[in-house]
Image (cartoon, rainbow, N blue to C red; front, side, top):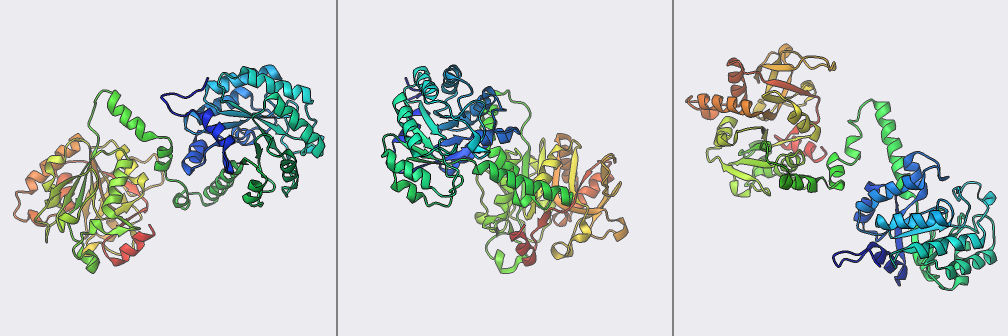
Amino acid sequence: MTSSTNGEISKTQQFKRILQSKRLEFLMEAHNGLSARIVEETGFHGIWASGLSISAALGVRDNNEASWTQVLEVLEFMSDATHIPILLDGDTGYGNFNNMRRLVKKLEQRGVAAVCIEDKLFPKTNSFITSERQPLATIDEFTGKIKAVKDAQRDSDFCLVARLEGFIAGWGIDEMLLRAEAYHLAGADALLVHSKKVTPDEVLTFAKAWANKCPLVIAPTTYYSTPVEVFEQVGIRIVIWANQNVRSAIAAMQETTRRIFTERTVQNVEDGIAPVKEVFRLQNAEELLLAEERYLPKRRAWTRAIILAASRGNELGEVTTGVPKAMVPVSGIPLLHKLVSQFRAAGVRAITVVRGYAAEKVHAPNVEFVENEDFEGTGELLSLHKARDRIDGDVIISFGDILFRQHILNNLLAEEHDIVIAVDAMWERRRKRGANGYIDYITATRPYSLRYEEEDAFLAKIGPDLAVEKIHGEWIGLIKTTARGSAGVCGALDVLSKRPDFGRLRFDDLFNHLVGGGQRIQVLYITGQWLDVDDIDDLARAQAF
């Protein structure tokens, strides 16, 4: 019997092929579903479910302090997350032959391809801790466990790897060969020869004496500097990198946690750690979104985004000759594409881009375009008015030349007021004014505060000519509206569009009109973490943003 389905090769068959491979194969350690998926994505053909690493991840010692059922639960997540075979580090089998029989049954049910058991006594002690004092099981007892595994397995391709701990416990080559022969005859599909020496002498001596009677496996944790070609030359079949993932995770978490604790902020570590969207990708969050669209009843529409990208960006000089500012590459990716990716990462599905200058050069996947042929010398409201019929329901409106951290957009979307604008409270740190000296300073009902119990702040006035003592921040070019807020914006546009100077109006005219009519506009304060790309100096800063 095999566990293959739909004509696909089963995980047990995959592992057997690894054992039978004519070239040296490698297994990489994993200790949970996330690390297992990373191992598979990297390209490894198999996973070593390390007892040491699983114990460490659970916060207990590698002395069978985690029960076999707890290990089994971790394995189930690892197996569900991957399509490649898993070899479980099964310690001593968690008991006697009867425990082994039940373990095999449960492993097969969860799609685990193979188990490795070692010839020590239960409860086990890690091989690198006081190893000379660790007694070995008798040959008869251990061969009984091997036979129990082979009799209990339902899948003929399920494999058992017998791990010899004789070198660890201080025995010589003769005892190792004696045990190896017995384990092989009892039905072991492969042997793992373990050593704690810093050179591979013991395992190489054994491999030469064993002469490939069955596949050999090693875990060069202590003799890691040995070139793998040395193992290949003596016929080693599989090399296991046994604990490097959990150790690297520990080092990374210690450093990140230390910095956050010392610096009292996460701002300085964010660029050096995986973005949240990478966590979502590894979790396969996209599949759930597609499933929700298929299976859940249709409720409210997804938030729409409108990106204003009609201007050339004259301040960038030759950079925008024939190419609009929104398509200027930052670290190899056009500004517009970065914005679109951020909106999609926040769950925004429908995206409209208003383009004007060199419209044929403005492109992005799966977005809708609206044309503004009157872009030259006009203000932002004319571009927004071109997309007026898209201002419906929940909407995000954004300039097409800004960069910002994802949390700013996420926080904006989480606010419940009808109109919310993102405002940088650290406006004094900015080294320059906006394009052509124009910048949208704001005065609010209260300044920025670190006190979270403060009431929400609301816009009082916005414009480039506010008195310094009245400035509470700088609007960064991001707005969020609910359905009611969108209706208010559309109503204001309808009124303002009748003015003879409408083509020159900007967003401060829109906001001040709304506030003057009694509309409350919430101010969501941020503290930096954004950049507008107006000129060459901005573009240089953007490359390192």
